[in-house]
Image (cartoon, rainbow, N blue to C red; front, side):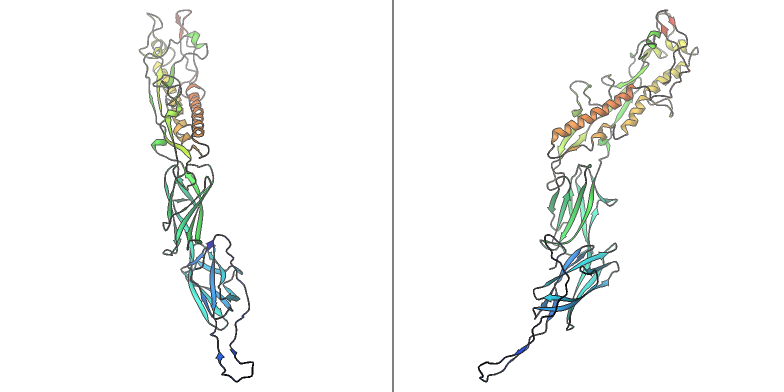
Length: 473
């Protein structure tokens, strides 16, 4: 049986030679005695082509041709398309469909034939070997193709991270016989696996940073490769609720929050605290939970789990990766009680902040609404708020804790602690950025204009100041 792509030294060739057949002869005795004379006539040489399935498109096969009744003979070879119009085959030696004066031996002469195709495979081709006597033999075959069929996106095999994925392949034309299928992976740990006659395999991958390829080989027998195909492997991110950081906020959630807005406090950085966005459980200015600054012995490592890939002969076998993530954001806004309509007065018998300023300096209801919008998501679409900026950040892969760590992995040699340390470092960086969002005021605008000034209590004079305090927020 001829072979296609082979391992080791294939030794394909197309060559010309001379006929060396032996004619019959007349026997006689040399001692002069008269004896019976016999005529020995050798049968004429014949040529035969060993059956073969076909030649892989853009590949090569050795067609084995033999001569009988002679040690060797000369033959002309012709390659012809019988049906189909896309594929053809040519002699590898001269890139032609004919090759003349090829010396064929009785032991068998391999003639290298290459498959050529534009986009598909031909239905049927034929190789003809013709001796100078006119005797000939023909062998029908196909230009065949191996194809990786699923899951293909943009010419690449896509594998979702950490999810067992079936990769399938096929031979064209359909129905061609093959002995077994071999899959080879490059990148990572590499790997080779034999799937018998099943033209599919299942792999699990977690490394989306490095280059990987998958090659499938269809074997004609235990050693000879009939046809193969190769594609790049790419790893895509997991999606869904597991990798989306949930977030909630409860507005104006502490009736006892805040201190009296005074002139002295207004003139001393950081000024009066009219509202705040903070963690709902701890009242701390933190965002991600679990968090080292959360309650009890809570830590970042409480928010994710790590496991190893179990995929023998797969390229990421024994790699560590993030299996689950449970980080969340649970916040509250708190509004200074002294600025509310029912807020306490600065001193007995004095009007409270809301009533003193309303109509005299500002519209107090609009002021309270602006403070609430500043801490939350803005009073209108053109305004911004601390919590709204947090939500925007959580929609970004870099700043969403679950999405940030989804693609983390460590190789089989790096181990679990490398993954854990890498992940906690990334979470700390993400947390630091989010904390800046809830504390920095420069990016939160559009809720109130500095031209609308209000009055605060002047403790030194036991009276309200004029309408002199104002800032954008």
